[in-house]
Image 1 (tube, rainbow, N blue to C red):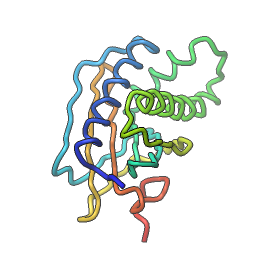
Image 2 (cartoon, helix red, strand yellow; image 1 turned 135 degrees about the vertical axis):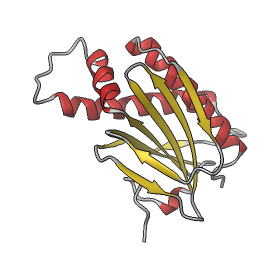
Image 3 (cartoon, helix red, strand yellow; image 1 turned 60 degrees about the horizontal axis):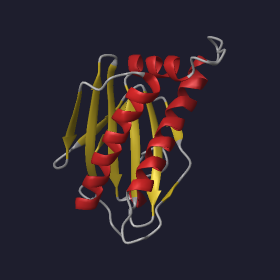
Length: 173
């Protein structure tokens, strides 16, 4: 099984590109810059809203998309523009939108990314709304991509090995 290596780095590059294209095509939010950190990432700062999915198969990693509040609000407004949403329901739609986005992007990325014909599976997405910081232990590996927009940033985190974390990115034990 692979955790974080050259294939994983290539995978997060493709995920970041797909995310940028998704934002531009589906919400008309332009990417200003994409910045990658592949080594010596010591901590992850989860922002206002974070969607999480685990990747299973040849990869054993967790992806988290962490949105700045202003960006999460803007994406949700644009993504749900055709729906009639009350103010009370807006936060629920933000959670659903962020989960839908990570599901679509990782699903589309997997179609374009295969390793020797092995199957890659995804767990259902979850959304959490707790800003916090996760510090890397010596067994964990973190790589990141930051997508900057005029509404704020979207951090894409790839965390492994998956066995070290629960579904909300808390360390097990």
